[in-house]
Length: 335
Image 1 (cartoon, one colour):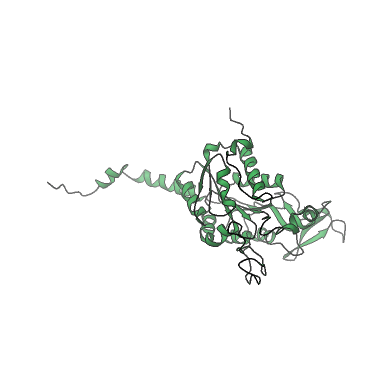
Image 2 (cartoon, helix red, strand yellow):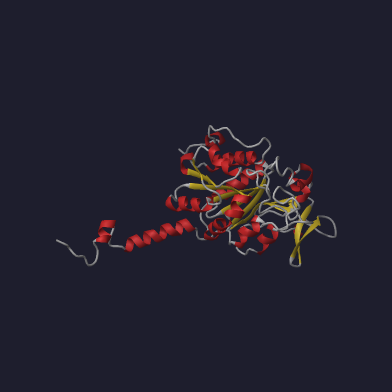
């Protein structure tokens, strides 16, 4: 009989040291709930992180954990997964840790399709070091390190993930606990590198960064929550939807200009072609921001391929130990 786990089984006894109101609290709670749904024993999980506010999360997990060094979480998590493929490995990172100093490790973990659950908490600011602009801060953003406004365009995590041939990308917001929990559960069941961008609020240094889509009065009209196999509908009464107008996505209202529910696009997260997923992930301006699982496709998994290769090589080798290997071939006995 399999053990039934609860969210509390994954909580450590450590006091959670984030600012009151920080969006990281919500992400932590949703991860606890998602892990209980998955049902993997805490002893079979490893939660790793780099440096930053979000990277404190491993302390709050009743599992194996490793608070690593700045930007290197993806590299170390890759090593853990290859060495211990039986573990369910999570990487917790932030927009600075992941996309600045850790950017190279991130894109290669995604490109290799290592079986990692990557949680990228994006508050568009460096919070731990007290308010410098980050790789996801908007152009013109005024911060301690950009007092006259940034002159850089930001990274868009979805664009970076899909550009690195990512097989899984999802996006959620910290105030939408039920949907965020569902996203984490789906991402954990994905075989390969899953990237979940969580739009979190930093109440101290960048309060309201996502208010345009996260606030209750804005959310229904400014976001579309995508579910595989369902119509791309949004709005307070689900009266709006997305269609293709030539090569571009367009918002329409059902019942206007002859538009019917049959005209609305159906989301296919399993489609191998990346075109539609990229269009959905990059929506902004007059288009709603896409939330939910945007891409979820199958592809060869790095750590599985490594293990398979090792077994094939072992089967072909006559030597089964270091001593046998050293003594193979021509040898000389010195007296």
